[in-house]
Amino acid sequence: MSFDLHAGLAAREAAQLYRRRQLACSAQQPQRQFADADLLTFCSNDYLGLANHPALAAALARGAERWGVGAGASHLLAGHSHAHHALEEELAAAVGRPRALLFSTGYMANLGVLGALLDRDAVVFSDDLNHASLIDAARLSRARVERYAHVDLPGLERLLQGSEAARRLIVTDAVFSMDGDIAPLPQLSALAARHGAWLLADDAHGFGVLGAHGGGSAELFKLDVDALPVLMGTLGKALGCFGAFVAGSEALIETLIQQARSYIYTTALPPALAEAARVALHLAREESWRRDKLTSLIAHFCRGARQLGLPLLASSTPIQPLLAGSAERALAWSEHLRAHGLLVPAVRPPTVPAGTARLRIVLSAAHDEAQVDRLLLALESMPGRG
Image (cartoon, one colour):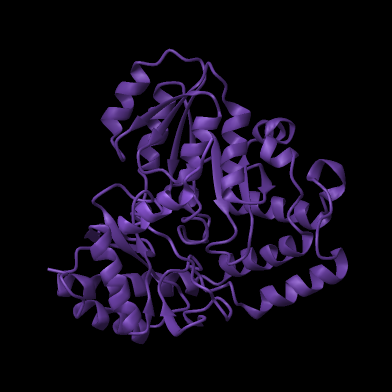
């Protein structure tokens, strides 16, 4: 069998869909050095500006001195440290759940949960714009997958009414990673209750950002563990660290410990990283000014974008998508911004649906108004934006 990889790569490049990595040469912060330029970035998920916080670096160093560099084993062998356990307890308290379980990444968390909860006789109901990790987890779970149009509640209810499966799970992003909109979790919860289903929310982009104390979507909508049985969050976005967790009931977490393959069969997160995440969680909860500043910057950007008539999608979160349509236009816009010293990469299919290529502008509490104004000025002169 022959694999003509060169032809496939050439076709992707011809379609303006080729992906290239940026080689960063400095720490995560708005003004950042890359191999070929010093750029003001609007593409990081470091929503609260914690990734380069000295307290996290100090905690990481202390943790490495105590625990060493790596965990050295899976959680179920000898890799589960006091640092991991304390972080799990603190995360559970932060999102108002009885327990939480650490995973190495959000991708692994979603794979683990759906694999542990579903089988061939189950049905999973998935929003069309869910993150790839939820889509892949649903496919690999072996359950029947029913996709519904983005936040189409009547359509979802029709699918639920037509299902006789004993085990049914609705899965959704809480904040959609490419559109930035917030899922109607209270209505989804009500639908799940009415039809005997469970609800899973991937709160990767809401945890730390939403809610008065950064508890995320569950706090924002005041959804307890009965209303939202499965909650996933990540530590590498608003907390500026690394890792992920699933929070829920005692029975859920014990089931995942017993059956989630992506938890059982992998090395635990380094304990030093868990120590840094504990500090980040404390800062995120106690320093509410970070969320206040972020909210102010989002409002400032949206006002300026409306005045310029920019084709923004409706979003009240740090994710502000500027719709270009074609991949070619999105790339041209990104290159224009780069020429003005700004880094906003183009997002193209298959990450987003065909015809919806965009700039995914992301704001952080580490930005200031002057930097946002600089972005708006460059967007104003962007070619073909009308």
